[in-house]
Image (cartoon, rainbow, N blue to C red; front, side, top):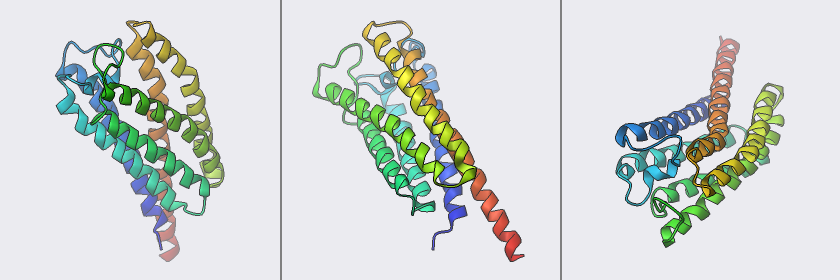
Length: 221
């Protein structure tokens, strides 16, 4: 029998660690390469073909994706009867696979439109990642509603993240197409809601896990 409180705590740890690693890896790009602009350049530029930061930052981005998968797996395990969590797990698994592909075999072509098979594949996997995040946000929004009243706040957060991503994504596309000096900032505005979702859902899962564990100790005391 699964220890739900322990599984929830692990889900929380994985989600919070994933968010911290993503933010840390992205921020460290400017330290590893002072010429890298957080406002102008995409996150993928850090692991692009020929990028000086690729060898240093590909591993933490891979770890980030594995942690996102681990979070989804543990959340599903804790509430296995809720079928929507199985769909959410599938979507975040696809997102994680796409994320790993984008920093390994299908890295971005640095400095412009994709011209190589790897660069084209990068765009394809980036599209897969975006779609899974949007759809996954709404799936988890409905799933959290079925997990009981305490999870309703996470439901609202999930719906909000999906809506914000939909609103922010067109600006990221337009600024990239226009080669704007704010293309990197626009991309980060689209990514940020998902990172906030990881922190929020992970923090709440951790809290609920500790609460359930504390309640069980009281019952058996």
